[in-house]
Image: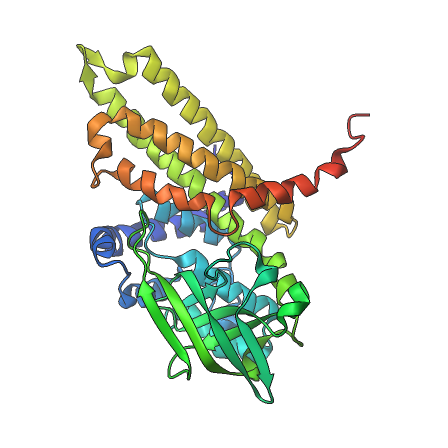
Length: 387
């Protein structure tokens, strides 16, 4: 049954256009991106020209004027072709911070280029030795009149090698904890003190560039700060992370659905012991469990999409969605790989790729242990709810 959030005719037309574009422009390049470890820059500008970037932003700033429904459609269609190279999610989150906290001048300066794919966005949060604890960030931004002097480093940065507009999480006062965290936007072209480190090799998502970044007394104009004052960054981060976690949940459930479709098709056509695989009860029941889990995930995600469109998706619900769907994705992909036997273990097989690609979903945007902590904090609200 088609969810209410995607039932409008204009969304069906948009999905059809996205699917056709990806079949022509992305599918033939997926293997090349995995081999080279990065997406070609012209793909970003082609996606921008097609209207796949910043689909829910203001048209006056280059956006598509849609809602999270249009964003979800693009993420779903990317997952359905098996793409984990084109890191649109981080690009969109970078733009989201600028839309939420940027001045009108900052929005006019940066959003049209992000929408067109002329600039590629990234978010520099994670540091060596520090992942999910953003209050303990060590990269420092020392105010110096009309600029900041930034020192430190970041690692595991998606789009790090290709991005030329980077949202940097830094602190103006390490002793202040959350109250020192400040967000700066880096325009990397000819940026003094900025340098890129290694492009990091990963076990999965091999076509998505992931890099180290270094800041050696990097000079960032004070005009590139997001927010009216220093120390607002932690609150800004907390209010936007639900959006990123829902993106991951949309991807997780769609990949699970793709894995299930491939496994069922194979089970109906492959024969063992003189009959189709699907006729063997043990395998059939395993696929029944996988279908139930994927459907449960879809219901949860569709509810969250409806909530975010209505402006009422809270951090706890987004954490539940990210937690449950990414764990489910791992279980379903594992079960579906088993259906293919030895063929599913070969690196070029779609299920093998999905298996290694899925593992990071439980780690980034806040590890699933952090998601459990967020959910646990809300347990007190249930007290007395059955009385």
